[in-house]
Image 1 (spheres, rainbow, N blue to C red):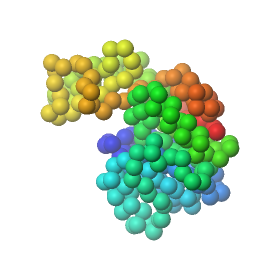
Image 2 (tube, helix red, strand yellow):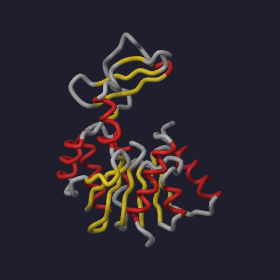
Image 3 (tube, rainbow, N blue to C red):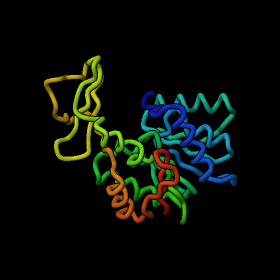
Length: 222
C-alpha cells in the first residue's frame, strides 16, 4: 500500500465495482478528488464515463496521465488544491472522493467547506461517493488497533491528538519515541465517525450518508 493505493487489491476492486454500479451504464460526468495515479479514475474512464481528475500532487497527475495514455483515455487532469479548483464551470453527475482522501481534511471547518463545494459542483440529485471510513476503520480502533505506539521494527509511529479523533503517522527518521504530541508541520488525518459525517453532510446541505456496501463506499446526495 502507498498514498496512491491506500487499500488492498480485493477491497479496492470491490469499491471500484460498486462505484461503477452506482454510476450505471449511461455515460456520466464524474470528478475524482485526489485521483492519485488513477486507481479509480482509469476504470471509470474505461467504462465510458467522462472524468475530471484533481490532485495536488504533480507526480500523481503525471502517473495518472501515463496510465491513461497507455489505454488511450483522455480525461481532464488538473493539478491543484481541490478547495481552489471547485466548483467547475459545469455541474457533474457524480464526485468520487476515495482512497481515504477525506481523512486528510482533519479540520472540521475545512471538511464541511469541501462538502459544500461538492454540493455546488453536483447536478440536482447528483451523488458524492466516498470511502466508508467509519465502517472500514473504526472497527479496528474498537478492537484495540491504531493506539498510540511504535511498531516492533521502530519504523512507524501512531500519534493521536489528546482531545480529538485526529492523528498522524510518522515513518522512518520521523519516529520519535520521546515525542507524543502532534507537531504543527505534520500532516494530520481525521478518523471520521458515522455521526460526525452525518453532521458534516447536514451542514453542507447534502443527504445523510448511506452505506450500500459496508467498508467500501458511502453515498451522499445533492
